[in-house]
Image (tube, rainbow, N blue to C red; front, side, top):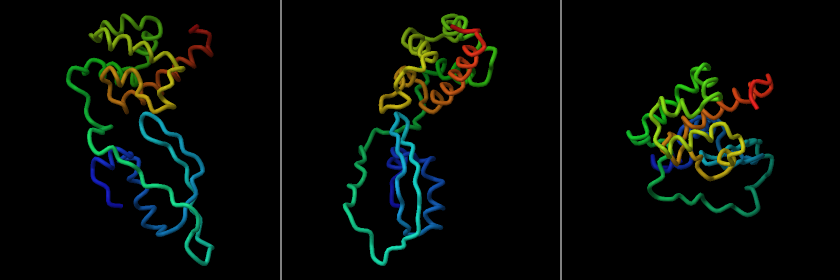
Length: 174
């Protein structure tokens, strides 16, 4: 593969790295795309690689090459310093159950204690809402729009929303 660092970032730099040794081991083996789900983060694919039992090259239409955006796409770009408080609270929520419990009881006081500005505090409330379509769409999550790191946001959503489901199942949350 001959991709620039920016192109690797656009298509999922770290997500692509495990594929390179596999491609090296497999060689020119045809693959079948089983499923693909685009998201605001990157895409999630499941592929099946099968030996080429054909006597000649594959036939059929070749899909067009990926169209890179050519500039400005930096998924792993560090958030601005002004978003430090927002990113810190998302990190802390992932690692401290007592803070998650407090968040579900009084998220506004948690936002205030971490010094979130109005836009951040509004986006912070969306952590509770599993209906936000951003995880399964190409739109960034409201927290990302407010300055949160995309990967930190994703990891926080997974932990916080699982905690919310646990609390609901135990009858401790409406």
